Image (cartoon, rainbow, N blue to C red):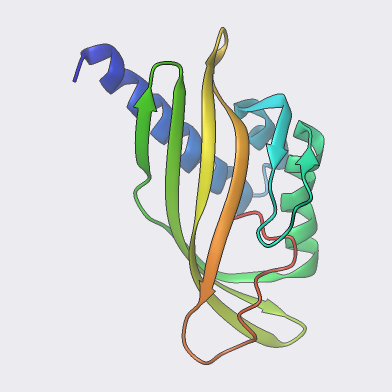
Length: 146
């Protein structure tokens, strides 16, 4: 691996882990710093698409308004880099409360990033979760940002 590729991988890793950190610390606008203006979210289980930086960032606010995160841990992202495109598989585990019911899930964000003049930016995102244990419905957090 070249030193340039190694630097790119570290930059991407920091960006995707930073998204979680900014969300957990309610620095929502900082999330937007690593997104392109016309970023696309492909919600799991839907053919719909959510477009735009503002909508992406708002999804974190909406989640926090609807659910209380009890526990969250992010695993080490797995990043594949090909030229000016990167795919980051970002595992996580989460426990959250909605309406007095605790849900525990394990999943991952799938982020596609593109090298731009101003650095690596997220251009596309989806996620997948599966319930852990017998708690909750396992249907996923409301508009889960993770």
